[in-house]
Length: 265
Image 1 (cartoon, one colour):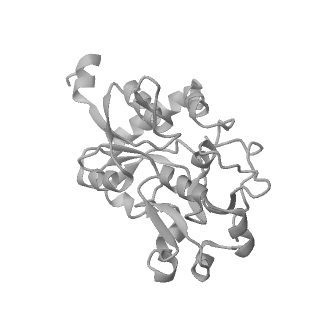
Image 2 (cartoon, rainbow, N blue to C red):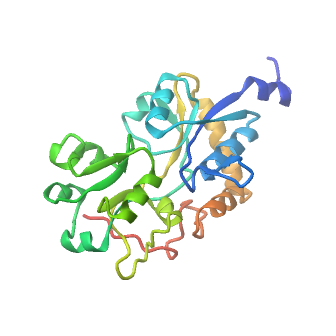
């Protein structure tokens, strides 16, 4: 068996990693360098495996297609689903950031929603990211024309926040950390937008194209993540980008840092 030296191993293991300007997961530093929580975690874990990485800018929907086709190696920040498991392998969780439905104060008063399906009987306009998977309930409702009529797809969350601020939509579906970075108060007062439903509390993971990876590679990646948790570097990375104290067990915001809404029964 040939044992590769570190430089040779890195040359033999070069991975493409999806990046997009989606704070806190993808950002641009003042010096112009691409970074972000997911970006830094994926690159550090790969480096600990002896791999090099190349960031490729891709919108979410295109990234999914390229991952399926094997033209993209890694896509951090994905929720595991049966459909995605056809073409991707998944790491252990690297971030707990519940997907929330946020509404304006006025919309939340007009329509006290008990579950996501209740949107069908409203006139609300909700911004969602094209190609996003927010929960199994959300995915199932995409076959319902009355539900889909309430959705306004946008290519990125930044546009969704701008539309909410300008009053062009009544709400946004977003994960908790992204909402915090966008300035959405999760302990709202007055007329501030507020989270009204938890859609999913599953951890986000790193997805690997099945065309170029196997379970053994993912296990090595998970071991690198575990080492980052053990030495505290993963928590430090998250707190560098997400404005809340991080729970070392869940890898999400500490329970007393934010007050998410109660999930419907």
